[in-house]
Image (cartoon, rainbow, N blue to C red; front, top):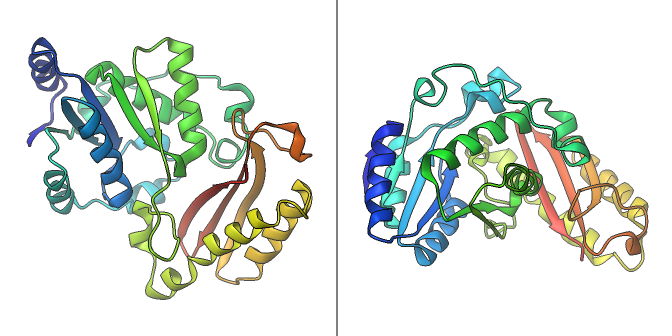
Length: 280
């Protein structure tokens, strides 16, 4: 594995690969890697000639500076994990390399960007869109891999690719969970021992809710999940939503949409966790 910090050097290395006819599989990350990331990388490695991973904690997608400052950074551990999946190139730029000047691009994702994370984290998805666009322009990948834990982010990126007609195939990958059901996330390492003990209740409640699909309406399921999560004093809820799986708009009746997903966001101590589960 080679580590590259400059855009020019990365482009030169990738040109050599493309001249040899190698396809490029790209996995953008913010580091603090876990098995969920590694699954994306294994698939990218299997499906492409070259695996490129970026590690860049993107400051413009954080609307909370404290969250940015506390985001876990473990470069040595990350490098070992990347080597374990035979990553070919790690792109690890500094902020000044990615943003020599402020990027004032403003993207309108319509209804898709106004719900859930878009409502609770103003400007977040615009920051995501800017950095993903820049990374795609730099790496020019054939395929880019994203996890479904960040379901709304995935939908935003798919829409960005359509809006800008970017020549990249977005590959969604299923949520990877711990043995007790907790969705893998870099933020999990910030949980205390007691908080980590409580966290799997999210998965347990979502699983039970989905099993009640034939006896609860969407509104009743949403209310049931809210009540169940609220009963755990360690949780502080932001939202529980049941939405269609395309534009992520609220579902009022099960026959309103061909697919529906339940989404939650909550704080466990100082750590904000998100999760989702497909209903059908």
